[in-house]
Length: 71
Image (cartoon, rainbow, N blue to C red; front, side, top):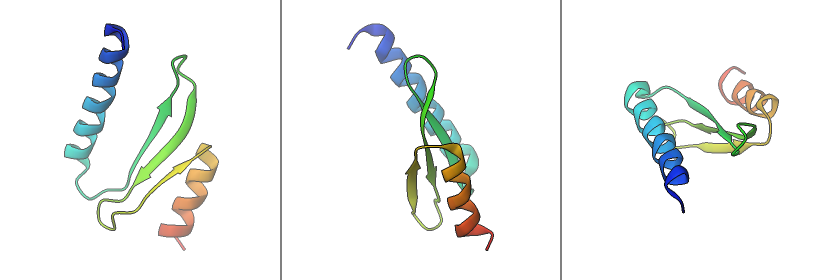
């Protein structure tokens, strides 16, 4: 792994950590991007229930949230 990739990974995990510290018990949602910045998938995590999921599109992720939390 070269220095550039290491720094990108370090930045990504730092963002996850900060998000976790700030959000507390809120549903967490974040995109995973490829090297070009294109979103490859969407992750969700509910710290209250411990449920997590990964989706291929933002629309799939929104449908899942809607079904789980608003119906």
